[in-house]
Length: 246
Image 1: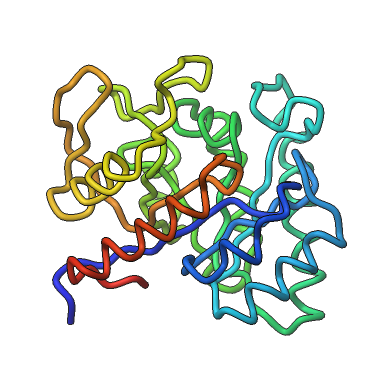
Image 2 (image 1 turned 90 degrees about the horizontal axis):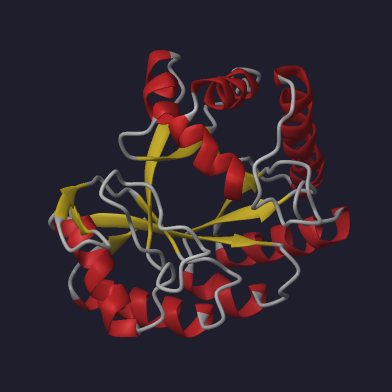
């Protein structure tokens, strides 16, 4: 058994169209299912590609806000948010049943993901949706987040997620995309960032301090302008370091 392992995921089906180039370097993917992006056609296309490359498939539900790509918080009732998330996941499940593939996980998108990390009401809505699944579907969550704690309390299996291409604040929230240094573009900086989180279980924050973190899956955003090169370089680097890709 390798001493260190990591799953590599990306958000896909979001209209970029680079999935054929991304899939060879992924071990799991998060498919947009209509909230911020995605149609039945794009979902089916990406599911087919994921099957071809043996990539685990997850649903990537969002606030129902295509106009803002799901990156702005929305003030919805718990009932409305529950239905929005449930309907998105179920729309992907229809295609997965057709393709005879299981849903591996759920990973909320954008503002929904960020709010669930710090807001108990939002997090609990996602937990209630997860309880509907009969099979053990995992939930991708940030380390030391409210949604992680609630999932553990409710016996929802979790996978701690880190972000390869994003900078962190000291409280383990992500630096806002409105800040010019929110994204990591330089390949060597990105691999060092990931290696530190996987092996040393620490992240160097935007302020320069080292904060403990746990990494079980690592995301490179599929809409990053250099996603393909970053993913290729990251996977090669990790394999050369003897880190197993799950």
